[in-house]
Image 1 (cartoon, rainbow, N blue to C red):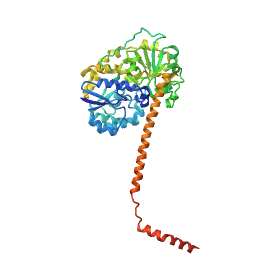
Image 2 (image 1 turned 180 degrees about the vertical axis):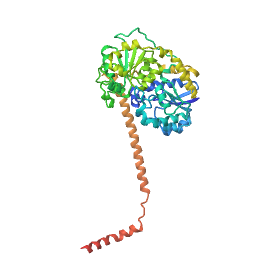
Image 3 (image 1 turned 60 degrees about the horizontal axis):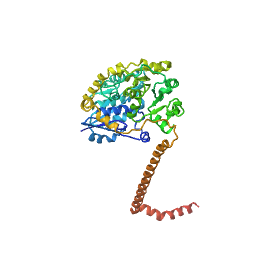
Image 4 (image 1 turned 120 degrees about the vertical axis):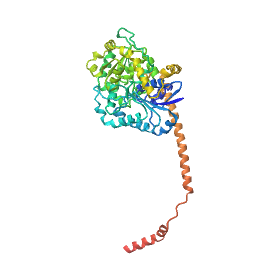
Length: 469
């Protein structure tokens, strides 16, 4: 049995309560991370391969254990080549540098503006070089999200770079069934909208959301950040993101008060819920990929290179957010739905999957669609589990709503109390042992000099003082 260590927040099979998932931040700040890590887990799990989640942490000291227990380290990444991720990229590089097993990167991307100008990434170029060099010492090639990242790395001199997109869209292998179920959208259509805090605050997405909310009563906003989920479940406003009151996940927003907001801590419930929607749009790439996996048409409002290059590669319907923000009518769901051409997305999917499969083969990784049951065992196991529903706004005051939250808090207090009691016992025991050890150790004998000084010191001081008088 081959064992693969997968960089992911949690295993797809781990069922956690909403409270525990938020407490542990298993989504690694963004629920979109679980979309591609769950897909990678399913793809790589075969009768001869066990896939184990590393819990997203980068523990450099664990390198020896990883070398001993695993046959490969697989690293699905999103926009890892960005300044705010540099510290984590360096830690990942240090870990990889200590590994003797193959290391395979799936779908890494560089993030800059829509113009594809890499100048903002110049200060972290050395970190990117060191990361890619460490990976390529342990794999045949690096899989990147799209055209911009490919050129970015080739300009640094790296040649073993392959565009493979993101593993998320290969969750069902060569099959991708997305179709328009309605000839056109109407005012009562079920529409999902998504977006980041920066798009809402700085790129005009707030105006698009407000306009859509006023026109479509069945609109639902799907957030992705851990701060979004904590605002919904706990009304926690301690995160800096809480300053963005135009975000529908903020308790002051009308969509929050109307209960028209969700955040998911498991991709399976996220995708299942989106099956009942007619259309999805917004600036979140994985929020819309979740819709496509559900068979629901989607259009991405691209605000940066990471979303644009992925849309171009997979031929996902998309428009530029900066242009849509200037003309809100251009971002009306009815128009976006009518303009969405799904032929390239669906028609070219099998070829893109074959390219992804060849990348895996080249790097010594088997996949369930070629070497297994096509994911049937994975799906059967997932159906047998009971995952929590999407996180909803905390507008309820009923007993059930309160008991689940305060029951978890009570368990946490009990656990912490027990832990503190144990720590106090251990501290008291250590102090007692220290005192006992100090009691049996004889005081060091005074030196000859100190004994002589005690004998003659006082008379000498008196004599000196009398001489002064």
